[in-house]
Amino acid sequence: MHAAILASVTLCSAILIRKKFPFIKYILLASFFIILGYVISGYRIYSVATETLDKEIRPTNIAATVERVHLYEDGKIRLTLKDAEIRGVKPLSLVNVRVNKFSDMPYPGDKIKIRAGLMPPPGPSMPGDYDYGRQVWFQGLSAVGYAVTELEITK
Image 1: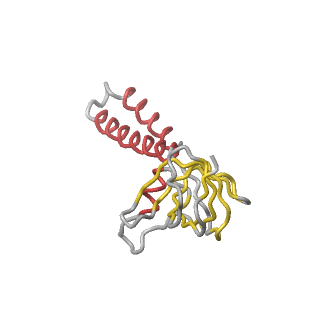
Image 2 (image 1 turned 45 degrees about the vertical axis):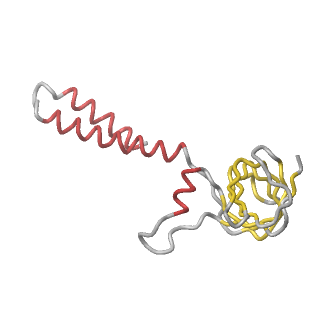
């Protein structure tokens, strides 16, 4: 918010003094566009802000809708679940859960129940390393986890 005000003041100053000091207007306009870049990036961060879990949740019952299914070569799957309902936690927008046991293949749109442990997306393992948590934050994922029971398709 402060950057937006600063950008507006900078642009107004450039317009007012352009005749008296013609070379300064270029410096002020360059400053305006730099500040505008900060404003736009701040808006992007605000618009995709994802609430993630604060702490790990021990295996608990989860009811959700399947959004995406990723099949691994070893026969296991990773489900991206939307609107996950978990007792004691407000609904999470998107959750990735790795499932080892399932009798029927789930498809996007299926309602499922599963018992799984969830945790906040992990950060980099070393300074400067790949930051998986940052990537999934921009994708809107609230948590990642693992299933401890077989997948049950309810609808």
